[in-house]
Image (tube, rainbow, N blue to C red; front, side):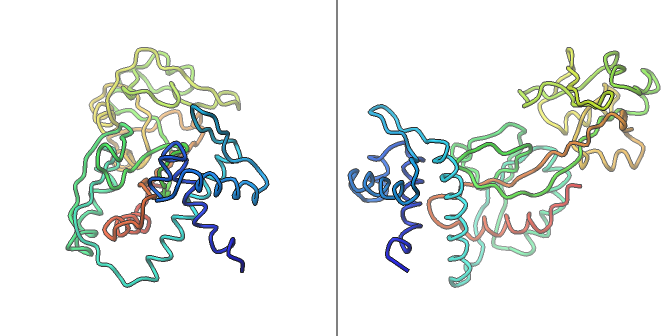
Length: 301
């Protein structure tokens, strides 16, 4: 194995810092190198790969499509290297406070029942759980781990998939007795709807009509800031709500809510991830312990 092979991970680390910090000078300071050394290292890396990773200009640095792919994969590889080194080192005992940011629904239905077991396994760890359905900046909020729903966009965060849950449109028996049960997508126009108050990726509910997928727009819905508030509004008879299956499964089984339009449900799955900042050194044992515990014990289906 040649010297270049040995230093591949080091070149990846410098490249990632160039991207994260937005330029050669900042990366050079962070890596204790000169800007010219960083530039030469990146040029050698591009030469070895046979492709340009970064478009350079006097004003800003921009990744090429190949650079975007290499950046995302470099993050994952460096995280795996750090994980392998942690496992090979002397066992560090989890201790200290973990700040977790999650949604109200996940906190109530998934996390709360697991907290006691996690703290029993790791008595030197304490949890600080903040609840919001908004996507937060982990650095600004000083969060160690955030639980996020939906597809993950490209970012500087590392994501560990926890599972997925089927979405369902539900209403209370009292509401359906008063307003009638919708039997087709066209029927929901005459019904009260409950929706999220913040901007969603899709404005509407996906449905299957005549074998084709459509998005039914929601006209003047009652809006709430989080899924748990929507669930309570649906239980109170305020209208139809489209919610993650794990939040309403017990309500459906107990007859407190009724799933409607099952034949028009496209069966889409909302995925949940535990996300964390993976660069800048090994994860603390307390954070690693929580991520492993969630991966082993979270059941969303």
